[in-house]
Length: 183
Ligand SMILES: [Zn+2]
Image 1 (cartoon, rainbow, N blue to C red):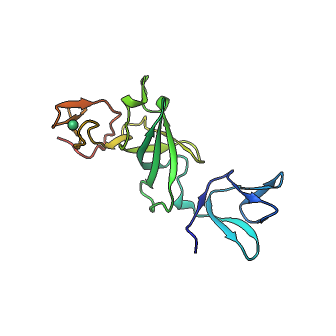
Image 2 (spheres, rainbow, N blue to C red):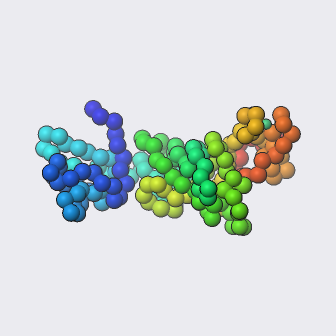
Image 3 (cartoon, rainbow, N blue to C red):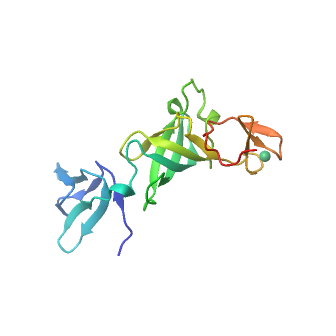
């Protein structure tokens, strides 16, 4: 048995020379694409490719997801979605992006003023395909756990700021009202 692969709408699955398009797929110019989200089913014997719907296993628009910031670009944080709040655990890795325009009601100049590498965040999904776009504007969304970028200690919430008791410095972030370590 191969590992389960989850696909999102519009992903290229193969070409008609290899497979017959089955449930949940469509063909365009000889290529086969997924028309829905779900589990990829490649049937080598019958040479068919189809998608099995697994609704609760993939993030959907409006879901609040838990994620880890795995990369930082100029205006965008790259996020790995690790779970959907209030639903079953996910079976695969889902990559997502948080743009600087989606972090606060107020203008935020730099994405680094909102999140940083390795932060754990709660975010809302705003698009239904990979890479999922995220928003952390709402009060309960944002960073729920973070460590100091200098020394690695856990940051604690003190007077609205995330504080490192080792370095006596605070770091600017978009903090979730559900931040885990409060003083
Ligand atoms: Zn520190």
